[in-house]
Image 1 (spheres, helix red, strand yellow):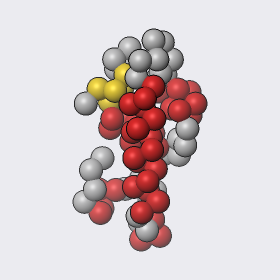
Image 2 (tube, helix red, strand yellow):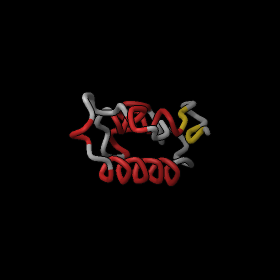
Image 3 (cartoon, helix red, strand yellow):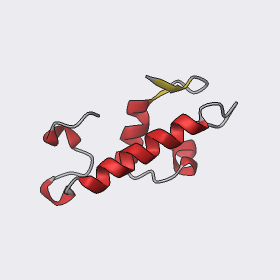
Length: 77
């Protein structure tokens, strides 16, 4: 689903950026240019960020050979 129509950013784009290390809306804005124009998506961007960070905290990353390979666990991208 599209989160930021101005930049054409989807939930998957945000999840991928968080998997690569983005930890704040500022990080996502820098990497994806999300919530940079009209900012109507800011609440949804924060929600996606919060949900993905919570998922990462729940997963034991020590079992993964590469950070961000959630497909190994059968989790959604």
